[in-house]
Length: 110
Image 1 (cartoon, rainbow, N blue to C red):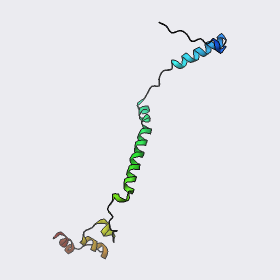
Image 2 (image 1 turned 45 degrees about the vertical axis):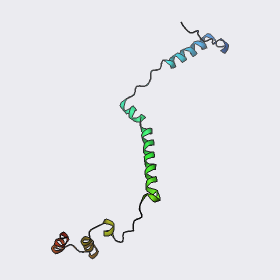
Image 3 (image 1 turned 90 degrees about the horizontal axis):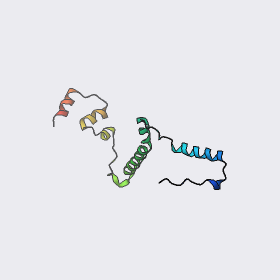
Image 4 (image 1 turned 90 degrees about the vertical axis):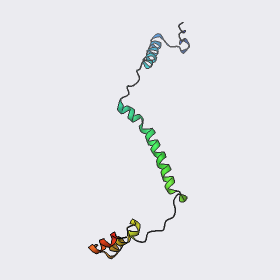
């Protein structure tokens, strides 16, 4: 069963304008969908990926900035304390000298 054609008579179109309008509507209906290339598919994922990255960044910054998330640590007094160097190496750095063979042998003994 064929549907009844739409009556365009009330629009007051002459035959030429009505045929142009019908052809334009049919031409728009027959347009093929765009062909998706692999690059086009990847480009389609750009916005969702950036949105996910923004959410991860916001959660990470919130976690790092939360005051109760970390234990307060005493501020290191020297560079050696900050780097957590063993005491003999910290002494060599503080004295601004290279270790001698005796220093190296001492540092190996418990």
